[in-house]
Image (cartoon, rainbow, N blue to C red; front, side):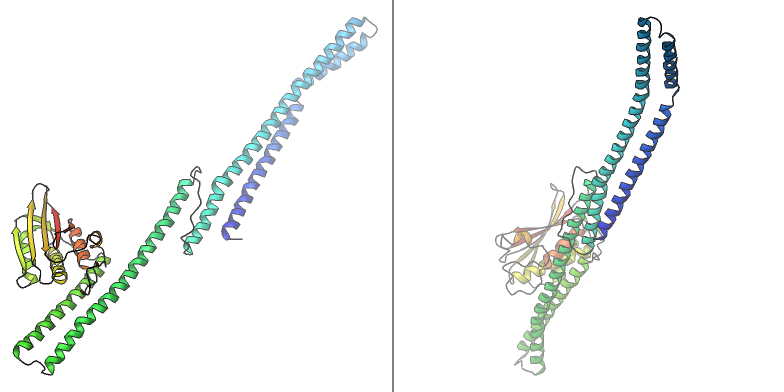
Length: 390
């Protein structure tokens, strides 16, 4: 027998004991009332009158028969009246006692069915949840007074189950990200080592070849830095530790600075750039734009990239866009491209863990803005929209 069953049996015994005690008390009260009613004054007076009539009959036995018959009828009427007067209150007392007992037992039965039994199920359910069994639902009746209460507990079980599933998925995604980054980092590190050894052994035949080796090493170092930055920012986002401090600042200056700091030679064009003061964190917006420019360089190598900043008065937003002329993202991948660790079907062998767009969306969201992806045909357009102050 489980602890819940034992507790339920104990409560049931208590309820039965209370009902039995109440029944006994009602019976004793009814008995005392019966005794009191049997000794009542009116009944005694009627019995005295019957005795007097008996004496009168004895005196008239030698008299007329009609008078004697009248006395007999009067005597019988008094006896009947005394019996009725004494029997009705007693019957009423016992009827009330029986009704009271029925009410007590009905209340006990109701409490057992509506309160005790649901709480027995609830205790057993809590033990199952504590033991990790989140698949068994809690049976409840909506008509029961505690139906909504027990429903809330079952809803809690479902929420815990969903939270654990999400946690397990996040852990699995974290492992996948670490494995993917480990694999992606190995390739540039191997190239760095190979070109470094070539330089050390003097395998370069001329200055141009040595400069080419050095450029390759620098590019591979940038790839490693980008991968580790993505992983670090992802870890901070997971812990909600990325600090975003918005200020009313010129957003065009931030966009211009991000393009200049990215340092891509020749293929990034800064187009229309409207001046406006917008609430944002310049440092974090630069990070988001650099992530988008790095994505464009990674997945659309050599393709032209255009950056713009447009003040849309009609929609009350400032829209910063990064558009490349590469292969873009397949339509079936577009809705999921900003999800954590998601890599489209066209990623091929490009290094990365699927965090660039996710981190950009997270940073912009923390600043009160929104990130939208559009198929530019050809290429991809990423729009960062920031609401204007009213």
